[in-house]
Length: 121
Length: 150
Ligand SMILES: Nc1ncnc2c1ncn2[C@@H]1O[C@H](COP(=O)(O)OP(=O)(O)O)[C@@H](O)[C@H]1O
Ligand SMILES: [Mg+2]
Image (cartoon, rainbow over the protein chains, first blue to last red):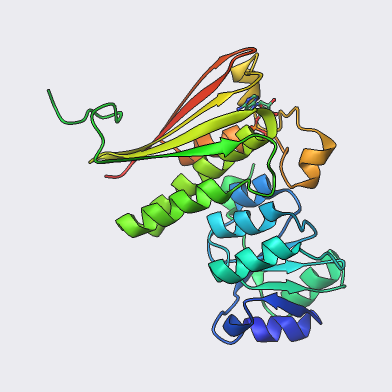
């Protein structure tokens, strides 16, 4: 599904990368607040859902080749992070929905887990 | 003498160094992002770039979290990429213990920044073909990760 469809599904507001909403498509997603877990277990090209709005959420998405970030529970990334995301071409979306609700809606819409199960014990 | 041996100790084709500031969480990750851009320019495969970038980023965040300051150097050799991170900081008393998944001395503040799962060094080991860490308590830590390109 397109990122625009994700935005509608999660009742989200796009704060960076508006121009990519129709072009980016999402097949897999992962949810985490610990960035090392994202770096350890996720594959590239996925959607990151997080309640962590620090600069590290963006650098993690950038380093791990993620397509976009959804900030859940009303979390807002600081202005510096928004500006950097805009420059790096990584869309940022914010929703007041909780993590569970977001994951549930995406799963129901056919989005799959981003994890590389072979990396987990 | 060969131009380069299997562990990237010869003269590199390219070397680029960056300063990493301890305690600066807002900038934490920017050096690794720049290195990632450099590797992209060079034309390495996305999979190799991702592995190298993860190594850089975890090592950079360790300097940000635990050390006063450090330098990160990336070297491109004909057959491998070498990442060197040297810091001035408290050092690691027990490197073997620090390498274990889940071992962490991170504070709640660091965890609120998304790090401190004790997965950083294991992540580097997983993504590198070779990882060496030398540390002197009270002085600092030096880390060398090698990724084979061919
Ligand atoms: N550069 C460093 N200087 C001092 N201590 C470090 C450094 N890097 C790692 N450590 C120590 O090793 C532990 C494990 O590191 P790591 O695997 O990256 O996990 P985390 O950073 O999540 O704690 C850290 O909690 C810290 O005690
Ligand atoms: Mg770490």
